[in-house]
Length: 133
Image (cartoon, rainbow, N blue to C red; front, side, top):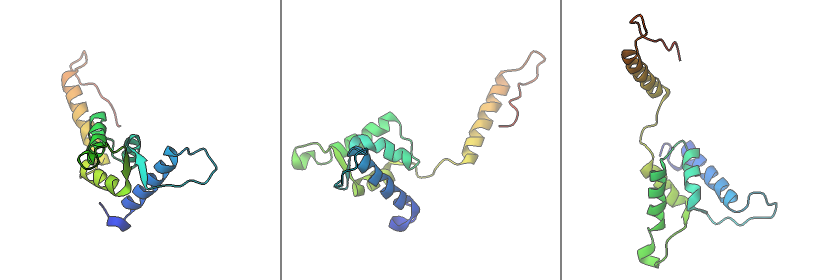
């Protein structure tokens, strides 16, 4: 992970994890809370998205099942919660290594526009123009 345990990504991860703990323990209360460094598995998709990784539903299900069944042989019970260290491993192992940059998005739109223009000539034989995007 960029910067290790002192980097911005890890600090963000800890902050988002802490907030997810609050959300899962009734965030609307004004009573004191006892947080135990774990969140329910249904919080994983929001945590991943908060960190800039947008997994598919299938990827989410795979991650949840990876944690849920990780201790079944030892305890005989499925695990329904994820702690911080497990989440860090999950995030590092499942997110794409390289992010998608603005340049990648621009290149994708250029390819789409070229394909569209190639296949869609107007009545005069010219191509349709999308203009600048």
